[in-house]
Image 1: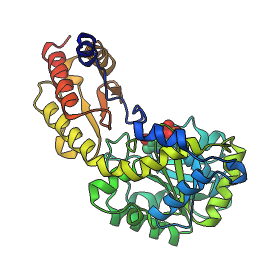
Image 2: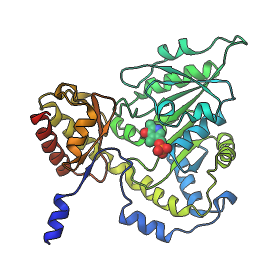
Image 3: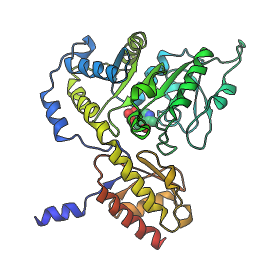
Image 4: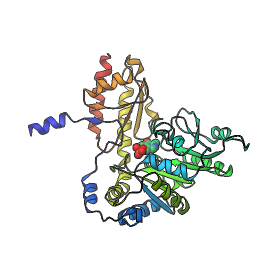
Length: 355
Ligand SMILES: *Cc1c(COP(=O)(O)O)cnc(C)c1O
């Protein structure tokens, strides 16, 4: 009993990312009991079931299970570009900043980035970035959107805007990829189905390993033709997995149960943002927090974000730096409302004192 109390008190509140969740007992049970086969032969019944279910949820022809979101994005980029072509994406986007430059190093694609304040691009910003059809110029092949936008603070594309970008891009002969790592968070925020949000994209990647709570895995969704090409590219990248039904089983639980509770993460993020807004020397606009990611500026404390985060971590609260002044915290299924209250108490102590 005593040690339980101690454990409870010393519990680390990990707000670095929604990737840190541990599989639930239901997931572990499903994993232990999963029926498996060799997925490179397309004979893993659990993977097949997961892919069919994902295609159904997104109202698309087909889907392909991949080990990570980064591989999902890269696979979709490679399937829809040729070496030397250009991809238009947002300047703070994941494909440009957090995937080891794989789009350049492995796909041979030149990124053309557009800076925004909230991660959300408009067609008016994209159109001038499309290359003229002059043979000495690299040719634009693909536009990539990110919904929700991670480093802009979990911001959501208005569906009409995303649809308009797809329509205009298609008219211009371009394909459009969606990095939908957190597309279910966007769907919960908007009160719309993911199938509706994503219906005009040529390829979609979404993560099971973020807010949905699975330990591993992402999915690519699209046409039969796209998925056929992606399956070959996935193999080329070393992502052909064998009895991977053990992971697909967890992802199936995540796909069915995960979206139902994301609103709780959004409420907790709001609570965190509203609490932070009350504190001296912290700058945040809580009304801008839409989903499960909270960005705030601690520059006025006189601490750098790494000094600030160090002060929090000795008090068992973890966050991540965005840059020297800004901090990012992400809510997920392993943090409860009381953990947010505790995190706010700790942050209050740290900013109250300053350095
Ligand atoms: C997490 C994430 C990915 C994929 O990350 P992996 O760690 O490779 O699974 C892709 N895009 C965004 C926006 C993400 O947040």
